[in-house]
Length: 126
Ligand SMILES: CC(C)(COP(=O)(O)OP(=O)(O)OC[C@H]1O[C@@H](n2cnc3c(N)ncnc32)[C@H](O)[C@@H]1OP(=O)(O)O)[C@@H](O)C(=O)NCCC(=O)NCCS
Image (cartoon, rainbow, N blue to C red; front, side):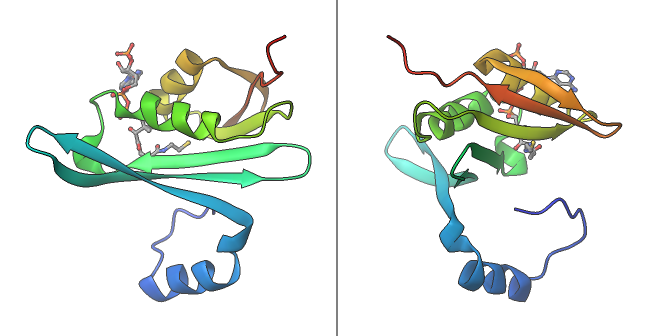
């Protein structure tokens, strides 16, 4: 939603939600534990453009490092339309996210000094 790493206020988030959120499909991720206790643990966003789908997402700090990321991003991929490339970008310093994307089948298509640009082959299986 933004490349800014500055602090984003509640008011800025509310403004984004009012003006821009209709362009995006926003998903909340939940963890269930025995006894059906449910925790919100992260979010994912799919931006469905005419020629591609763009993904981003993240887990709350307490839920990182437990392999939930792969499940989160697999679900986002599953919500993208077939036949159009699915793309995302990841900071080169974000080794954990990069590992998740490689495991899901994303490939590097280009890069700049800060970022890897990655794509998932989303052609329908014949
Ligand atoms: C990125 C994110 C979604 C990954 O999900 P996660 O569930 O925490 O990731 P995992 O614990 O499953 O780790 C994924 C893999 O990276 C590996 N890994 C973890 N830390 C690593 C590091 N510092 N360097 C290299 N690999 C690392 C893990 O060993 C694991 O590989 P494995 O499946 O072979 O064991 C999550 O950490 C997150 O939300 N981070 C903050 C927000 C963010 O960075 N979002 C992505 C924006 S592009």
